Length: 115
Image 1 (cartoon, rainbow, N blue to C red):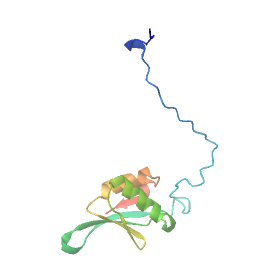
Image 2 (cartoon, rainbow, N blue to C red; image 1 turned 120 degrees about the vertical axis):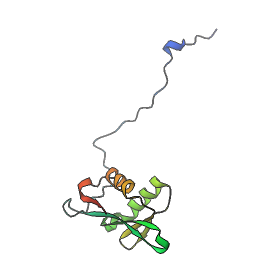
Image 3 (tube, one colour; image 1 turned 180 degrees about the horizontal axis):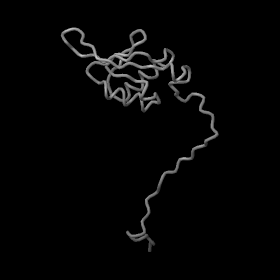
Image 4 (tube, rainbow, N blue to C red; image 1 turned 180 degrees about the vertical axis):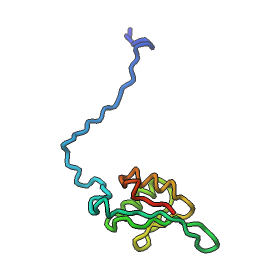
């Protein structure tokens, strides 16, 4: 006969993840690694393009991190973010959502302006 635990003492297995605070995060994404915080100024603005279609434009991101930020925004929003020069373009009015995501990525909220 099997000895099974009763419903009152059933314990679900839990996952435990160990984090080593001394581990070297050499490839960790740090958006302000190259810029001083006083120099990082990001502008998120809305423009109307052909046929009065709104386009959200992000300017002022570090040039070396532009592709990484674009990739993260594509993953988050599930749609395309286009890199054009030193700007990121996203179709539609997504100023608030993009600002929240940039803050989540580590950019200081007081250095992000929305127009």
